[in-house]
Image (cartoon, rainbow, N blue to C red; front, side):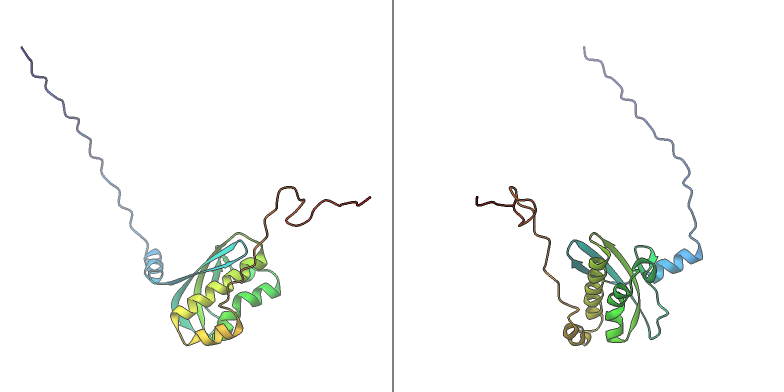
Length: 164
């Protein structure tokens, strides 16, 4: 005497979806940002992800944006500013660039950005490789901080030793 148990199906109420219209400015920015060339640069513990948008300008009108700031506001010393802009000055071509950089100090970040920019420029034009390589902009500096060893004060500094 088995009785049949009816299963009750739960139905979900359909709520009307609100469709937000994108403004014309946002659509223009999205179209503009669709295509880019990306490269990675590293120095010590700093890592820079560089995106170059191929809208070439001979003048310095195109911005370089680093972590949401304009590059002169992010890199403060003249030496760091020179390092960041040097790949563009070497190939004498300016591009709109977006850079995300993390880790390390500002000097290491500037050098990581230079390597990333140089690699991205080589992807745009292979003829620039010789010029950038001759200046040393395509070299990854392998020097890293040596780790601290146990039993020592620092990586190599031991406690002072007395013979007598």
